[in-house]
Image 1 (cartoon, protein in one colour):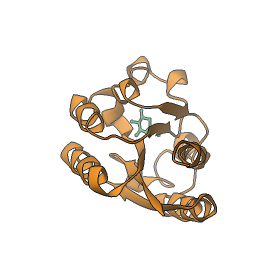
Image 2 (cartoon, protein in one colour; image 1 turned 90 degrees about the horizontal axis):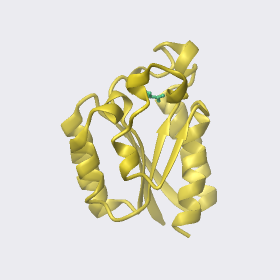
Image 3 (tube, protein in one colour; image 1 turned 90 degrees about the vertical axis):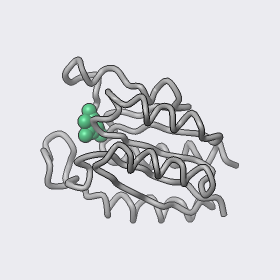
Amino acid sequence: MKTVYILNGPNLNLLGRRQPEIYGHETLDDIRTACAALGETLGLTVELFQSNHEGGIVDMIHTARENAAGIIINPGAYTHTSVAILDALNTFDGPVVEVHISNVHKRESFRHHSYVSLRADGVIAGLGTEGYQAALRRLGTLLA
Ligand code: DHK
């Protein structure tokens, strides 16, 4: 079975408790459970990680180079600031799908730009936590 990494950036450990009017009530564990179940139907093993640190996310992308066929990434606020995460993703050969729970384009203008989009094969925003499952379905297609 191919492995997909789901990488999450800062503050997403608080999902479900953090601004639920924007990010919803589901937790990262709920996403892990839903994506693991969907992954089984797609023939994909899913591993979900979260870090509040830019370098931690870079390290996880480096690990993905050896261990993952595809990456789903929600870099949180680093989406809008991190050349280091973009550079790390550019070292990864497989497909990358960028996910934002909220519709970043409907929010403050500083959320409209994404460094990660310069690398991502697909971008999902505003589908709530269902966006992770949509991203996984897309990777299922791309990795078939
Ligand atoms: C999550 C965050 O933490 C924000 O910094 C981004 C993103 C949006 C989301 O919608 O999942 O701007």
